[in-house]
Amino acid sequence: MKTNPLLKIASLLTAAVIIAGFTASASAAGPMTYLPVKSAKAASALKVGSTVAFSCDKCRAVTVMAVDSKKSFLTGITCPSCKQTFAPNMSSGDRRAGTGTFTYADKAGHTGSLAAAR
Image 1: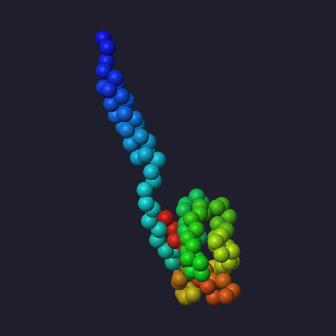
Image 2: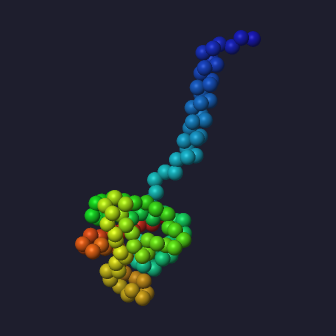
Image 3: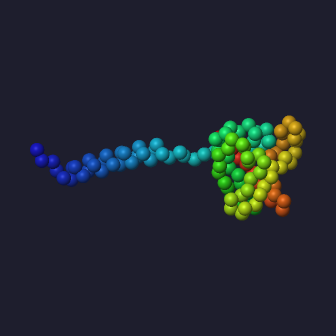
């Protein structure tokens, strides 16, 4: 029995669209929500491998990174865009208890902030 070539092409295209749809839905992660890290206690509680974002107020760049085993973001961050080095800054609250606002500041007074993926 001979099949119609147009029917064969249509069925192949349908199969390709279905496969492409499954592949795209499996690989698309979707949007991520980031919430501000408000204290040193909350920053140190972030788990290794979790995703954080640093926002540089000098150049307006946002850098997304994973928390490494040393939690190096607790000692400082260098913005990859403007190359400015920022140190953690506790602006209020009790430093020993780890409460207050957790931000970053450079020597020129520019600030930066950290947010963690929810």
